[in-house]
Image (cartoon, helix red, strand yellow):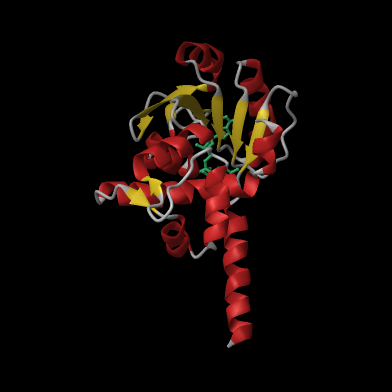
Length: 213
Ligand code: NAD
């Protein structure tokens, strides 16, 4: 990621929710959408929305707003979602199965094409149509499938050893759902995901509302 993109991290985090609203407008047959409308839908300031959209390079028309189709394309291109990425999922348990079944990823160019597990009872089955393989076949599958991303949903005690295997098999980006700070070489990107940070926000907002009452 370029330095410019890294400095825009809060904006990048908001872009998917903009995309969701814009897609709804497109499906309703609207040709244009204004920054103010997006801001109202998401309870943000219009200036913030306009600034965020500016990083994609798109320019709105005065009084009309942004052309919906071009705006979607600009956001998807900026996020790299206009190219399909092949991903493998490691750990076909509760969370892994839920992620494999999340149809929305296809709109973001993320294709979970294979899952891996150490449980013999799961190997040879499939989760939401995604085949589950033995970890022993990881290197071979990663190269055959052309996968660069791994979604890591194993129990935390196994996270580092599985990561070492992923790196050896040529994976260069790991979406890490475990609570382990993974050690990886410089050429490998790790993004840690934690649902509790969203829950923390919810709790703080609930407490703030309670204090206002
Ligand atoms: P789970 O026990 O249902 O699934 C874990 C799966 O990993 C099982 O199928 C198991 O057989 C497999 N596994 C175990 N060791 C393995 C190995 N060495 N190689 C390959 N597969 C292996 O657990 P879960 O509830 O799906 O949680 C999975 C992970 O996700 C945990 O680390 C959990 O803490 C984490 N999690 C994170 C969040 C979040 O917000 N980031 C939310 C839920 C769970």
